[in-house]
Length: 267
Image 1 (cartoon, rainbow, N blue to C red):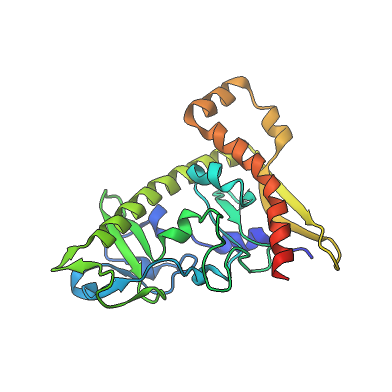
Image 2 (cartoon, rainbow, N blue to C red):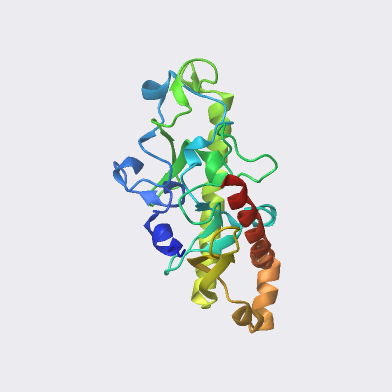
């Protein structure tokens, strides 16, 4: 079976945390990023009664087989998921969570993430995100009002007397850090694209009782082109830690076996 992952990836818009929106336009006016259904800018007046349940239930991500991955996550994620890239002039890094059939193999029957497996920051950020007002340094914190863990109540409230609670303050800080790391990741991915290092990749999953499942439609760093890079480029990458990410990407190819075993477990 062959699935085109690039076409799926390129349909996913950049999360507002990495982009901008003009003054007066809310992130909800844009095409929504993965998971998000109704994005609203958080205010005490509109959302003062909201609470966010504990994030143990991650079933909202059960029907995706890839999520964006930040460069600073590569080292930890490479043991669990193949790390790949989308195509195009503005590529992004992704963690593959399944056999490219629209199913997250790391969501258990009770909605929790598989024990001992790294949970990508993109998943942990939900239902919040941050948007930067165009041509300013001002940030707007948003929430998916229709997220399953969002409800009215006082268990983990977002506001107390119109002031952000610890729950919301931590979410704001996480979103800000994510936005900065996401921008850095896109810069790194553009460097790979500009040096023509990204080539179409493929993988084969040998599964019992069926023909070999061939997966294509994603991009990887071309090892021969990488090995031909001049020494000054490698040194620059070493100093900026991009080299660490490149080697983590190569090491993540071993996680195709993790995907194969998970497919077998879920059959």
